[in-house]
Image 1: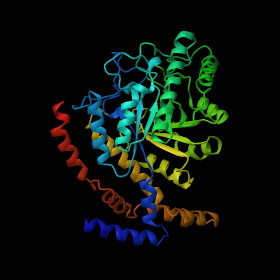
Image 2: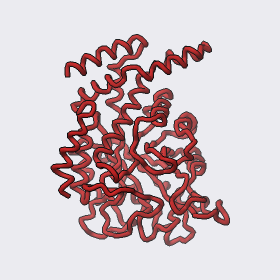
Image 3: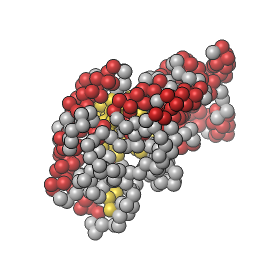
Image 4: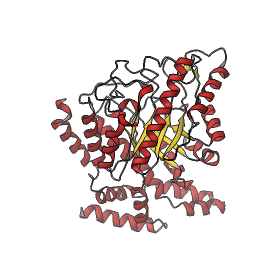
Length: 415
């Protein structure tokens, strides 16, 4: 503890020399709640009474032992992960994770009562909830849901999504904090359809009907995708579609870092969206050549993304959630690695002397700007993060590894 504090004090002095207040930075970081996704703990299984399996372009690879098989196991695993992550964070649920008590409840029958135990659990553990509609892994999913020309199937999914918004509203009301309700559908085609406009017009009409009711305690976000497995040539809900819809209808657009071409910069999109949409929802993932949802690590893509958030002074308009699923490693370890990596990237961005960089830029001192940016990479931000963990009573450095190993020996290995 003394060494950690000593290292932090030395780091504080170094950052003070470039006019960065590390104590204030830590306070800001403590107030950034990351929405941690429940589906990492059980490989996107959920608790519905059906055997559809994963469909809709979603695939989880690996079979590492110890995944959560029921609700109490999933909740214990999430609590364990959060005990190893500094700060207070949120939990994002998909509609398939309802407390259905073993009964068959179809997607167009879900109600707030099916998530009341989650709301009670969240309140008991000081965890705010977010929500997602679920159009995949269902007998009526097929290749098209909200964009389906078949009115019966389309209405089924419209009804489901309306109900998810009502559930989100109740979650937000009970937790006295808006619940983010994310809408993502897999709709698309393996080959290019005869008429692209046809399906996008249907989707637009479906969204108009879904969003007709205005709520006070939830916020809608709409998520695009580049392609899906088996639906590679055409995605109805493309980025262009949802960007246009969001800008026109004042909706939050979700940027999933795995849902773009590998050469695109998601960070570069932040400043543009902030000018035309009310807020932004981020689903932070790590694509490897495609939307493969690898565990988030501290890499250039992540640091570019968080740097853009801070440089735009947009923490109050950007919601950060995680969205990856890896069944090849310890699932709780994946949570901790991914969330702490995101926090480290945010910390590095917060420790930038932005005013100094902008002054160099305004004076056309471009050598000085680049030199400072390079020197910042080797500044002692790690000492600040270690102190941040110590201050929040979570393991410092690699100490979380042994805690997860112990939990695996005592809990998950016995499942």
